[in-house]
Amino acid sequence: MTALPASGPSEDLGVLPNWKLADLYSSPDSPELEADLQRVQAQAEAFRQRYETRVGALSGAALGAAIGEYERIQELLGRIGSYAGLLYAGDMSDSKIGQFFQTVQERLNGIGTLVLFFTLEVNRISEEALTPKLAVAELARWRPWLRDLRAFRLHQLSDDLEKLLYEKHVSGRAAWSRLFDETLAGMRFEVGGRSLTTTEAFDLFSDPDPLRRAEAAASVKTGLNGAIRTLSLIHNTLAKDKEIEDRWRGYDAPISYRNLANYVEDEVVETMIGTVKAAYPAISHRYYRLKAKWLGLEKLNHWDRNAPLPGDDDRVIRWDEARGIVLDSYRRFSPRMAQIGERFFTEGWIDAAVRPGKAPGAFAHPTVPSAHPYILVNFMGKTRDVMTLAHELGHGVHQVLAGGQGLLLADTPLTFAETASVFGEMLTFRSLLAAETDPRRRRIMLARKVEDMISTVVRQIAFCDFERRFHDERRRGELTPDRIGEIWLEIQRESLSDAFTIDDEYAPYWASIPHFVHTPFYVYAYAFGDCLVNSLYAVYERAEEGFAERYLAMLSAGGTLRHRELLAPFGLDAADPGFWARGLGVLQGFIDQLEAMEA
Image 1 (spheres, rainbow, N blue to C red):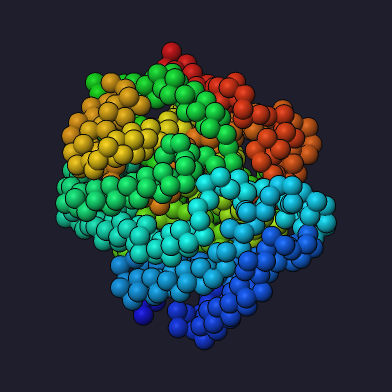
Image 2 (image 1 turned 45 degrees about the vertical axis):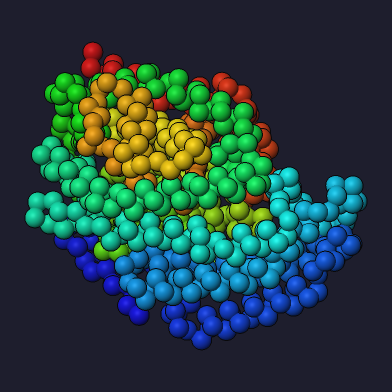
């Protein structure tokens, strides 16, 4: 099996790290990995023999003990699955790694099937029977997990159907997702005589040369169109699969499951989406008209969205400097936060180099509390890469802190997971802005931040709108690639305004968004997190001593508290429509400052 190549020194970026997956297992064929697979198989079989059909009759103390056993099984399954998934993300083009990843998924799926009965039986316990049991300390500890698990009671199917859906996952949704990943990872885009990966091609959209940006856009369009039938089939199939399962489970709308999984009320999500869409004219429309003027263009092309402003050299930032920028920003807020972040760099928890076959984009994976998180970025030395590093490190710090709750209580809804990451970005940006004294550079930095916030808020809500339109229409039949492209263009024109020329050149770009495949309706969590962070940061700027401690306590709570309880110590309430308007007001204020600089 091919090992990950070591990252050597780069003339511009320095030495870029590869993560040390040996903290999980030394290799795919290590004896420890096989021993753990056999051990967890035996544990799952013994657990089923001991508890199947008996869960409802357990005392409070016995049920608490059973949940502890269940957590230990899930912990071991999670460690094995994390190793396989991270190895695969490092090189999706290696067929042997792909084979290993699939084999592990199938074995874990089979083991997971053995203990599936447990959560199903827990959910069949009536509230009247469960309430007195929760008075016992051994079970009371698990109250938040039981609360979240039982939120899905009304959507639970019969045991046989649940088992069938669980077992078929590896040959259904997971297989289609893998096909999507390997299709994108295998693409190459010809630009300037070079064959580029997806990451490298999209990076050229921030090139200062408009001809280079246009050439990259044309190549991306050609590459996506070359695979558009396959990518369209993947999206259509997964949307139909979701529609079938949603119908059987009784979800009202395609987005309903995601809202429930985020433990956020439908009305809160709808209020946020409506508030952001109503603000399009005051935010994205207004800003991009400014940008078109700065670039001397009557209208922007879609490939100009991330173009640097005149005078923005966007110098290459080496890896060590990026590390210092982010950690220093974290340290000024909280030494403890920086201390945790430092471990990601010193202990080999980050994979940063761009290479063929590696997953595009960036993520932070929590693995399991007995191990530690890992971060994947594709670092190319741009300012946006530094912000991405700050973002993912925010996730990583959150995952370390929440891990103290244990596996079942550490899991955080996507909305709050993105709060930690966006807060990390904001700390880094504010730190850089405060240190900059040149008015021209401050204007450029402010414009960059506005663009990042528009991407986090407006663009992600537009993505959510696209998903809703696509899923709603898919319920009436399969969509052609052309029709999907039409929906995409309509949504993009609405969110970006007439400051852009949005034509058929941009039509296939929907096919490059991984969240649409892996986690439908994930995207609104970014807007949720950004607006929340803006409000949270305003509290921070006015706060007396103790804000950082309250913030870290919020992250350490993991999944034990819901959003109302988490925000209460800061005097914030996401159910208040004014909450979202205040969050957007920070972004509008930045644009006001940019307009004032023009006067």
